Length: 91
Image (cartoon, rainbow, N blue to C red; front, side, top):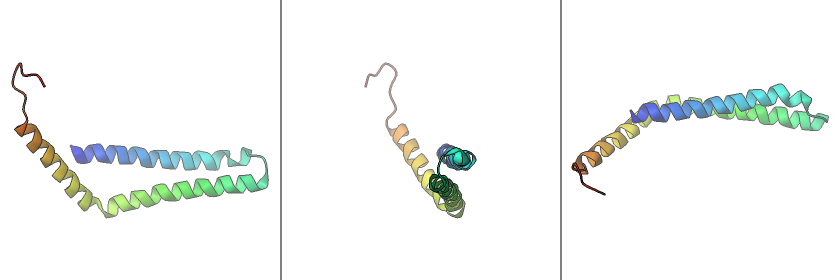
């Protein structure tokens, strides 16, 4: 469950990177001045490349990430089993 949650937020972050980069490329011609247009297009391409890089790193290190999230999940389960609240007990 922890892995799926981490993956969801990772995928959301990659989607944000790619959408910002694509929107930047789409709207860069509307910026006045040739130099500023070029800078906006270059920044947008760099943002897209950053999203692609992080996506590549995720898939290349998928087994390690799954191992770490499994350890976190086991630690959480152990903690919760050791610290159960009794009925009527206040914290």
